[in-house]
Image (cartoon, rainbow over all chains, first blue to last red; front, side, top):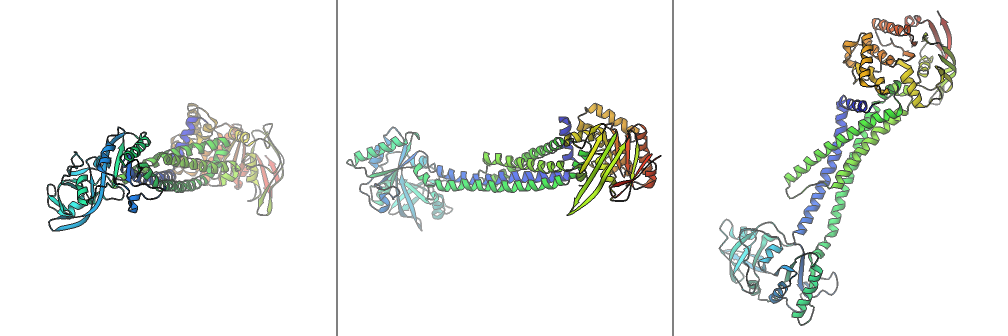
Length: 401
Length: 224
């Protein structure tokens, strides 16, 4: 049999039994697209969460006052024991290190905030202008804290969206005076919703200059210093140098804890790994469903054609030829079904992305490859296997159906 | 020439053995016109299937054109079926999704004959059978008589030496049946060996050599 004739024969039998072909294509494309969409969804969720962690800051070294003696133990600050304060002077000493791209001191405290007759308890962060860049934050309106000498107390503040809504309502907030504790701060900016600090909702923050915070909370001690390294490679060296710099300033005592953002992220590794497994599991299940779907349709289709196989044998078709005929059909069907499935799956992920823009639902490459592989393999195996069985029958038995 | 020696065919039905063919000895000369008659279950169709290599005898020897064919491999038997033997079935067995032309062409396609040559040969045979204007109709658009003539065209397109017909008129009205018998007899007149299995005594009587089977044995063998 000639190659052209073989292709035409197979194509004709697909085209001229549109019902059967449609069902098989449906099974295959639904199988493939299910894998693409489901794993895309899982992968999107995984990437979303990873992205959230990344937005906490990159190449970040966190300096915490107090020394944690055992791994896994909480830094001393959390136990309420601080041998020596971390000060603005320490912070300034760190910024002079050439490995440091930028650094920001952080003070955190709670204070009552009031505007007019409205009042509530809020979290106040005292820091410098670098904080915004390190935390990848954005200002919605107005501007962030102005750069300048961190030891100068300027009475300005940047407030979160929710604070603005709750205290100012529909009134203009920019330029107004917000009372924090016993001081008044002019509102110069409103934070956007992007950027996140793990565990802290930016929308409910008020950010003031670090020196003002020191005055407000009546304490010179910083909560921590965030240091961004110039490069990832220099981070271990930087950590070392930070320890030495501060120790020199603290009478030779190493009384701080230096952790990296990576170390924080590592804590969440288990969560991410579980998510990856979940995506894999979803993929495996949808693949199995797709395979069984394709298998069933193929089995039904071939058993309907035993008579035709009998006739082909009667007019002189050899077993190899019969196998080849069904193989060609199965290959055509599998590739068409696979392409259709990918297309359908792509549309599905687009639709999901349209509905939830935050979720970048893209099927991972391995899932697409596995979906195509499994669908074409089941298509081929279950297209050929029953055909081979029919071809092995005595022609007279096959003719009877 | 066809020689059958000691052909047995035993079917296993449940735990019972059915002796469909019982020690058949038969010699058929080239160009003979033979009819096989007998009651249902007498083994005539089984004998025809064995002659056509559609079924294997349980034991015995079958020589076709000086060649022992019972011991051939599946693929070699397929080649013999394709090149030397033509079949006509009671229910035509045309491929429903193919046109008349494509059905006739099928054995040529399987044998790898080039398209130009195929078109010429199929066109010629359809013309001989007066089916040229039906070439592109599918079987469900054709009458029974036309379907059977298409089936005959397909059976003879490879110029076989042996044409086997299993109840060729069984599914046709008498007029179409007569047409079909006439076509078969013309082919026989052209030199092809013709074996017809039939229930119809009128059809059976027309053959020059008439076999009668009962319970898997040939009980009558008349010539003339």
